[in-house]
Length: 97
Image (cartoon, rainbow, N blue to C red; front, side, top):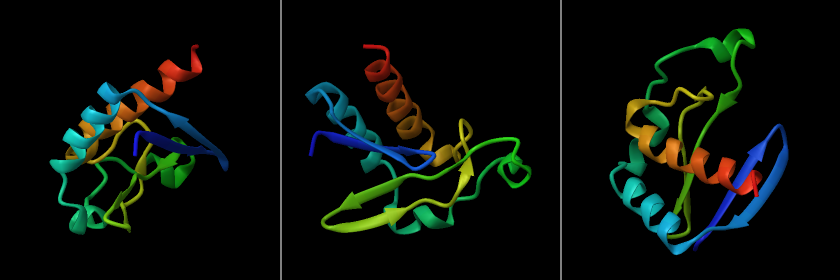
């Protein structure tokens, strides 16, 4: 609760986030059918040729982890876009402080 864990190139970072940020993450997460998250198709394939970093999102709900399919960093499946953009905004805001 109210923590965001990110892993970039194996460097894991856990950070506390504001109640407002947490509420947005919950709102966007509730719009996702987590049981089908691993079946979402990535819109691009640049990660296959090292032209983009490979990314995924893991949502933990009621003690169960649901991991998305892999997608190009910056270009998630449409169903994950709002959540991905919010997570990126939080990560960039925290890094700049």
